[in-house]
Structures are given as C-alpha cells and as structure tokens.
Length: 483
Image (cartoon, rainbow, N blue to C red):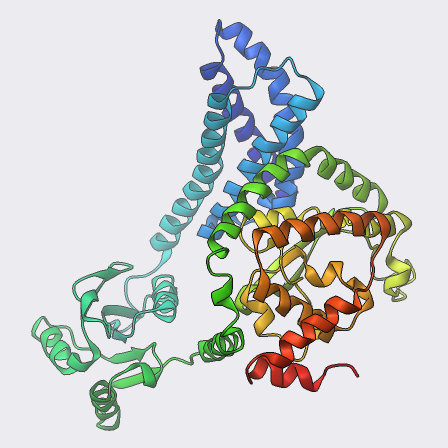
C-alpha cells in the first residue's frame, strides 16, 4: 500500500511538471494550451507508470535518499520523456512537440521528483538530530583522530555522523598527501600528514582537545615508515588507543592487478577506439530507447500477461574489470515452485512465449538501458555468471561486456566457455568500428536463421592465444584448450 501511495505522489508530480511545461512552451492562449496538455499528459502518464515501476522509484525509502537514487530518478525522467515522445509520434501526430517542451518537462520533472525526496531526507535528518542526546550519558564524548583519506574514511565519517548516542567526536583527519592539508571532508578538517601525528596531537591539546583514539583507514603499506613507527609507538606505549580498520579492498586491488597483467599487450591496439566506442554506444542507446520504446512496451505487456509481475528480471554479473553490474532482461520464466510447493526445473519454468522471446532475443531489449548508463556496450564479451566464466576470465573483463559479441556470432551456445574466451580475446585485440558494425549485422542474421559454429574463427582465436607472450592469459587458457 505504501509503494502505491509513493507511485501516486510521483505521478502527481509528473502531471504537474507536464502541465506547467505545456502551458509555458506552447503558443496561444492558456485555455488552448491546457487542452493540448490533456492529450500530451495522457501519453506522459501512460509512459510514466511502466518506467517508474521498471526503475523502482516507488520502492525506495525517501528519508534515506542517496546519490544513487538521484541517478535512478534522472534515468526515469529521461525514459518517461523518450517514451512519451515515441507514443505521441506513433499514436497522435497532431500533438505539437517542441524541443523546448521536452527540455522544460524533463527539468521540471527532475526537480520535482528529486526535490520531494531531498525534502524528506532533510526532514528526517532534522528530526533524528533533535532526538539524539548531546554526548554520552554520564560522560564526555571520545575524541577520535582519523589517519587516512579514502572510501573507508568517508564511510567511517558517515557512520559517526549518524551514531545514535553521539559518543564519538571526529576532531580531524591526517592525509598522506600534503596537498590535502587545510581542506575538509564532511566538515572535518585535514590537519596534516600521518608523519606529523605527534605535532597534531600537541596542537589539539593546546586547544583543550585530548585525543582518546586514533582510527587508521589505510593499509600499513600505504603509510611511510616514519608514520607507521609513530603509530606503533603510540599504541605500544599505551598513550592512546589505535584501531586499524579491516580493509577489504586488497582483493579488489589484486583483481585489478590480474586484469592489468592479463590484458597487457591487448588494450593498446584498441585504445584509440575505446573513447569513441563509449560515445557511439551512449548515442545509439539513447536513440534506440526512443525507436524501440513501442516494442519494449508491447513486450513488457506480453510478459506481464504471460508470467506476471515484475516484467523485468535482473541478474548480477561481472562487468568491466570485474565490477558487479545488474544485467536486465524481460522475464521468460514463471515462479520457481508450483502451487504444491514442488521445485520446478528451468525447462518447466520457461513458457512458450518465453522461448519465443529468447529465440528472437527480445528478452535482451532492457539491456539498452545497461548500455546507456555505461554498464555494457553494444558489442563486447558477453557478461557471464561467475560459474560460467572461463579458467582465465581476467583478460576478457578488460572491456565492457556487450549485448552481442564475436563469440556469439561464431558459435553462440554451441561452443565451450574456453572457446568463447578465445574468441573474446581475439575481439579485444582486433576491436574497431568496422568490426562492431559487422558483428551487429551478423547478429541480426543469427537471430533470423539461428546460430552457427565457425571452426575457422575458433582456430584463428586459439592461434592468437598460443602466439601471445607467456602470461596468465595464455598459460591458464592453453591448459584448458579442448583437444
């Protein structure tokens, strides 16, 4: 019920924004502009409902609105305007649509939807601060000095700001970089470098601030020997408490290093094309959302009638450099259990309509949004589940995954994961605009006539792997090459 109320509020804001944009931008008297707004507003509401449900705007908690929520709102606003334009052009060409109307409608919609969420966030924060006692009960706040400047520092400061008891007071930050001295992070001043910890403690004491605890948000290797020695001396001498936060990004750094090592020698050949590739992808995705909006809406309605809500299914998969992304698809399967509670197999869950959507690749249409936001590309290595990754997945993750790729048109589902990886690496080495156009054209033929295995392309790809210099790329993959 609460989600329904939030959806209604958002639709009211969209309606108001649309009405204002139409009245301001369309020529003629106000009465005629309002009459025109009724037709255009109907298209807007028809587009807003599915787009908002797809983006999940009514499922967020407004009082905890974050930057990520704002990005989703912006994406929804663009999607609503694009789908509205497509519906109006297809269904009623008498509706006057001008660039000024689309721009103003988008901005007003964006300001309204984000503004109400920010207002709720501010209201919640003020009410929370009014309930939080100043200082811990029966004592003083503990003064904390932070050593390090990075994501862990930001997380710690955010947690301290929302601490219910208000027991910790962040008195300052020490950053290894001297250029940060005097700047601020979340209103906390950067007082100096970790090497100067004794001087900083003394200066704070002069102002009546006695530090009770030091929190280090950097790994020891990121600190100089002098800084490490000073912190260890403070800790071992019992002068104050020194806590080293558990750091989890070392695995991420190791993964990045592995990708850098594996892709060394591959990326330079495509570096000149990569920046243009992203620009072309984003432009084509924006146009594609407008062009395919009616088809997307029809497929969404078919899915809702076939397998029920929600129409969109997402699955987390490794993206570029192993970063997790949410790959979107239209649902083609029913519930995992029947009415008696029996677990169903995937074959039993796929409906006849779902098989048709898969065969025509129409279930992949929502991935145009993945391309638009930069998670994917139109052409590139397909995003695979971790269990389906080849033995040496690092190199194929140096590019954004694609809706289609060289491996899809040269073998598809009928070849092994190792053969797909070899084909993906061949693409990474030879990527170009001409090759991308060729892959897209052959993908259309594959959709119409089915998949075919190209042994020559697979042999050529394995030749590249064998001839490449020794690395985790060729060593691990050649070991698993099918005989």
